[in-house]
Every structure is written in C-alpha cells, then in structure tokens.
Image 1 (cartoon, rainbow, N blue to C red):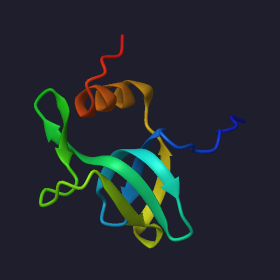
Image 2 (cartoon, one colour):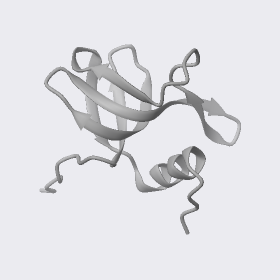
Image 3 (spheres, one colour):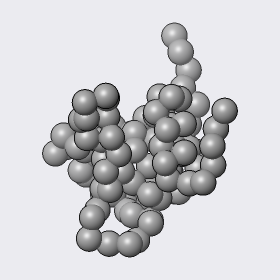
Image 4 (cartoon, rainbow, N blue to C red):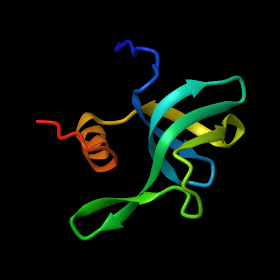
Amino acid sequence: MLIQKPLLKNDIVSIKLLSGEEIIARLEEEKDHAWVVEKPVCLGPQENGVAFAPFLMTTEAATVSINKATVVTVVPTHSSLAKSYTESTTSIKIT
C-alpha cells in the first residue's frame, strides 16, 4: 500500500469539481470550508494533448478560494504536468 504524504503549501494540486471541471493550481492553504489556491487553470483539449486556460477569465486575482462542498477530490498533480504548469505560470524553467 502506498502512503500518500499530506498536501502542503506550494504543492501543485489537481482539483476535480462536482461540475466535472479539473483545475490545476498551487496550494496556498486548506481552511475548514475552502481550498485556497493560487493561479488556478483549467485543462482544455488540444490537438497535441491538453492546454491550460484560466479558471476565471474575468478577474486578475491570482488567489482563489474554492468551496469544499463543490470539490470531489484534491490530489497531487502528476509530476510532468506539474512541471508544465510551473513553467507556464512562472518564469521558472525546470530541467
């Protein structure tokens, strides 16, 4: 059996919502009723795989609270996708 470490601040996480949307974001904090994340993006299909699209298109806010009642699961993002997310949302290039 694999033992999963608890999610920590700055982890890149995948969040599946009841609506079916999947979000990738950097975890800021877990509160009683919400996940607080930074730079959330949605996944969108593209010819060569998936593309990142802003989760909220009408705001410049980088930090978002997501109500836990709307969340199915929160898990660590696969390392290759977390790397792509980090590179596309920061100026950091991971080699």
